[in-house]
Image 1 (cartoon, one colour):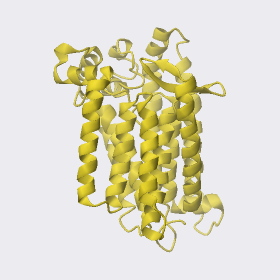
Image 2 (cartoon, helix red, strand yellow):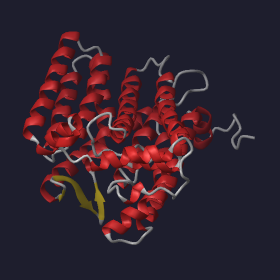
Image 3 (cartoon, one colour):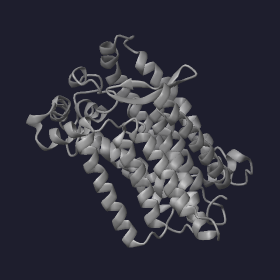
Length: 374
């Protein structure tokens, strides 16, 4: 039996009957897979960096309920409040990106982290959901309200954000931000000629990055010709999938995680392959596909341009990030340090994804008489 009656007019009661409970369940299932895999993979990583065996797992399990509560809390907000929340959040994130360049900690040649109130934070993770919703508002305003140059404001916001990201440098997050903006501009009715121009500029940017950023050069060269680069992690990842077979070796029984430096974060999908097997990996892939496709299905009859653009941007980010992580693990694209949403270890990523998917759940809430919550 349901906890809430359909006649319940409380905030939580209305939320329960209007929110997409199937997508909420799929997201919680991804969190559960993440909890299991982080518990299996993090002790080896903790031993390598010289902290307590379960310290990383404890941190993840502390943040996990906070992320779930944050996602559900944001899903209670109205469309109007989501817009305001995203604009304020993006402004604060831009300040943190600037602070990262001045006070940030350099790790592996990149400055992406800043200490805030005793916590190590990666602002670029929060930039993605706030950026998607903010420029959706600008693009929608350009179409629905005269005199507002929303398209140019959106392009200006994009230029500011990617400039700050490239100063770190962080090509991966820049690509994701650009993909989000590109998809939203296309849906907002950008002329095909300008679409072609932006595609050419994006290709030119990748070429420039290849010739000017040594780590990008090394990763692309290593992907095209493994003999020329350091393919240790990718080789171990492929070995993990081979060891796992159909059903896996069992939770905690894998051995490759002790050799992979990033097994708990960037290569956690390979831990799933070795310990849980092919079937479990396919279930994880299906959960990601379900969340994205289910989200888009809720937009089929949407007549609010802002909701359509915002959800498209957020779902694009979610799906693209999952594809990049899993494709890197399977050696289908050059390796990129990007977490698997809700599965990998990483506090900033976990909380930022909770913010983004909380906004998706809020924007796709249905009214009892049809349509969506305003």
